[in-house]
Length: 525
Image (cartoon, rainbow, N blue to C red):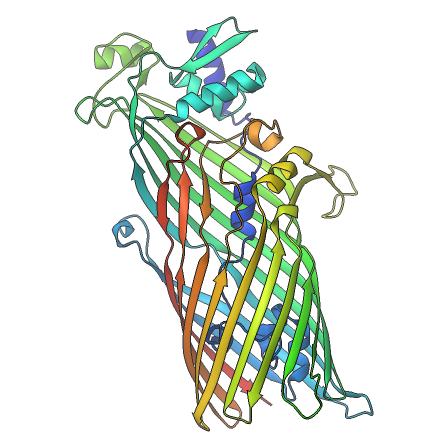
């Protein structure tokens, strides 16, 4: 037994293990856009510009929006973001400076019989801001160890020493019964029942979008546009999971720390149109379609598992206990296992469809309403070819993983409203609101599907999110060619952390409320 533990430990320390590839809930987290980023005017009006147009950031929703711009424009946007969880300041700075947008549109007046304007634009915006920090405790009798043992029994001994599952065995947390060739696994018989679970989780980074835009104004009534988009993902997650075993005075608990980064690039395309159905009326209708973003990503995991298990003679003498027992002293963890894994994979995000309506009342009032629908259940994952034909379009689908996605996720709709009023010529007052539905029709992870992501799991926890409400306010002024705009945004959202299937549906509720302010400086020429 000791020799097997030593061999398995060395395998893990050398990094020869297959940790979690990805899973449905992780993919949804990094691709689900439940925020609002762009210029301060765009944010303050809730992003409701898919029909109104004439706004640089709106090209990300409807490429035809820039066709309504009669002058060239350049803008830059920065601000600050802070969270609601005041208890976590000792671990992480709650306030972050952000650079949210930078763009340029060149407007070329043609005044032909049909073509009035041809515009070319470029815009950068931080599409998703991953900065979050959460923590909490859940008191329940279930244990992650029971689920680990169940998964080992279901998938066989071939994964036991090549993944995190093997680390649980090396750290004495799971027992192996029977022969090595035909083992049976169970939670360690030396451990008393679990009486509580705690979790801390921090994410940071962003999904950065770059759009190259082409748009045309036809007869001042029909506006069409095309975007070629490039997106760069830079995601980092640090988390810890602990089980409370024994008592505070004589603890037998263990805890897991893991770090996960995802980096890579993808491409997408957008096509949109805006029309004025009545020639002498400012009413506008907008429609746009956005293809999936085809990503090629690299995922890296590393972890450290800490246990009170005594696995060698030196520790046995140090603590005055026998080998293969647990030391019940606070703050003492004689055994730990660590490892890492790098993996390339592809991710195909959902198709998105948008409809919008908007209008103006002379030069003092504007309103807009947008509706977006994204088909998350068809989000797909695969693995790129390992040869010269390697590309984002040359991948092998993970059929089981994508079947889990279809069973867990649904479509997501988003509604945007925004208004702008000018009580005086040099001052604009703005307000907006977004409602973003939840994408989860089944929040329970299904380990019964033996896809690569499940079998080679780094852990058993997952996170889902509630519907999201965004409330925005802002103001702006423009003096000749120079403009300054300010916006405030409040995001109301909850997340739910599930520690393991053994305790489902018990969970830790995560407060993901966020506040931000942004300022845009712009110039027209």
